[in-house]
Length: 310
Image 1 (tube, rainbow, N blue to C red):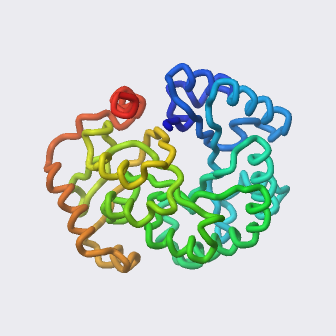
Image 2: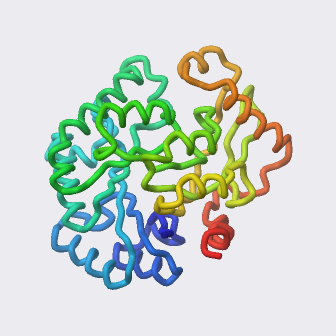
């Protein structure tokens, strides 16, 4: 099953929900992952959301959605959820879980934060992860009642080991994984090794590719067409054969100061063999120019569809 993130569709940012479903269906895709629930209904109107669900059912297109940031330790990151709860983050989360379930969406993806969140000195990273686990545990009865689950994304700021620890605290019936291989290299994790760790909990697999290049005293990630980057997709597909595949073009070219002792101390769980594997990826790319325009992610879509839909 292959779908697409709404904003990845050419012109998707400007499309309403019904037009998005039509565009995805015409491309032969089986799903749309909306960037927020307000992309389905700007006012979170239940009747509007039901109408979108009915059209999705008619077209045979699966609905999914992103909650955005969910981090009770940094509530300013979670403003849309706070707004949904009239100023209360937990109330907003409960409301969105219920609205999504009524619209047939039972897997809701979220991210913990931005890459800089990991290095904050006012609210330590571990405290942020603990706050996420505590919030998920508090809404556990609602999730079970609605037969729903939250999916924590392997975003640039979090390691797979930290995700697994949050799952251990909450339970895999409440929290699963949206695995995004091009992000784990930002935490010096090998994409296949990371996939092997999270595979038992992974419900979503996000499809894009990247290369790494040495520069600025470290390495930097650049995005690449699927099949021309560092991700061993055949190996990952074999590890996650039932995960729903979402096409998502990324835009961030993150720099990792991999030889900076202070940066390394902020992530003591780095495995030596995976650190070496990621550096080897940068060595393999060498000092070549980046041939893909990083400002035009849609240019990578034809090759992605060719690989996935062949």
